[in-house]
Length: 592
Image 1: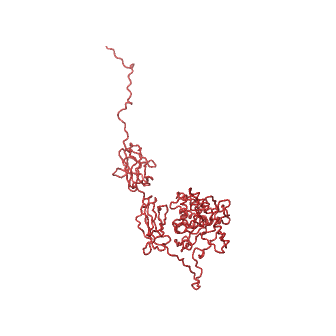
Image 2: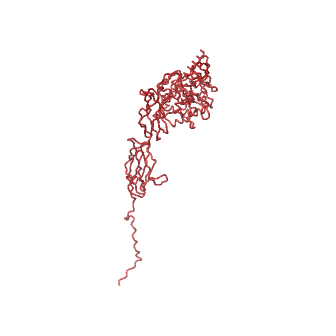
Image 3: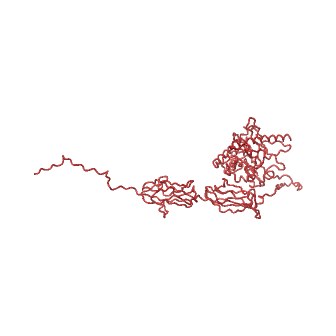
């Protein structure tokens, strides 16, 4: 036994050195000016970061694999997690199953388009996938990316883990007592409910599918406007996934390892991890084998549900199966919440592209109406809308203050108009929540002004040299992306469309006197197409209107076309009559 423990201690020292070296290398490569020692801790330090509760993390702070990559050195440390056939060197550990690797790269490509400022590297998804599930148990997935068998973490029953009672009625994890982390990226059901994505386009959001799970993990890591090329944001994102500095350093070590090079291997042939953060070595226990279920913790039966087979000695040996009582734990503030109340939120209305002035707030109360502090409230945007909270996500979790009130981040309206709702619920409890109705209205302007002051004139049958340009504003600020209409009206008092005078041309070159579908640019500027004039002279009115009721009349003048001058042009006088030929003129008769 002593020899066995000694082997474990030596292994721990080796892997700690690996993690420290990798984190130091990452620090040097990620953030110029940051020293290699900044934030470095050994992997034996399992201290948790202070600001992410289990219910708010991706995994519920579930156990994870602690195997570390080999050092890239002339004499690399052997990998603790090299599965059969994978070899013990860096080449074996650098192999990622084909479907799993494809899912990571697809997720990176999608996030590059959806959230380019996040700078998500697929190697980070690979590092988390390695630590959470050994790359979906070595790539044991079907052709569409679904794991051959479910990957479930232990019951989060408060016995050595966080206490998270069932939130999904067993829909994802099959457990109606406690939640369990699910799938290759190990999402707990309450997090998957809002973070889940459809990564393979089959119309489903399945945490057991590597394409869905990888895309969900990417979006999860990119929330709050985090830029993962920044070391500080990278650390925050990883800690929000599983709140432990040991976990952070383990993921960073694999991230650095994968950045140095990887290659594709066939599905199902990936190396399997061995050691988990909840492993307990008992006297006489043999080392773990690749792919085996980790040993049960003392006093806790293995499996995901309470056993029902053993006979209760206290019932006289009747053979009636009994279920052991749930662990006795003192009630938390969350346990005392009976319902939520609206904490004073008024009308939620905003123009497309603008921030809502009102913020959603909810108050947690007991059955007797007493307020409850330190309760996590999850605010979720639901409905057909592209409105998000500040930071770009559709879900935000806020802890109630001393008065029992939680105030959600500000809502930022998207471009999609119409009604939607924000739902407030208690994290970890199925109690009465509060829905809040909200509306996004179209972009509007309340004023229009012409750009430039030159008179707009042309001659009949000609074209206007100057285009008509206007600027729209709303409450003094530029009103961008506002819908507008331009109409040549009969007169300032008659809004009917004129049937003569100036006109625009459509795509076929035909005369039109109403233009719809116009939109101001980001600075509120709108420049109309060229105007032409028919043969009618006079003064005409061009009326421009916008969403929101702003109106501007622009005067157009058409001068008569030039007419020929009746006075002859001296330069064009007719030639004089030619003189008579003297030889042909009759001679005068002599006087006689």
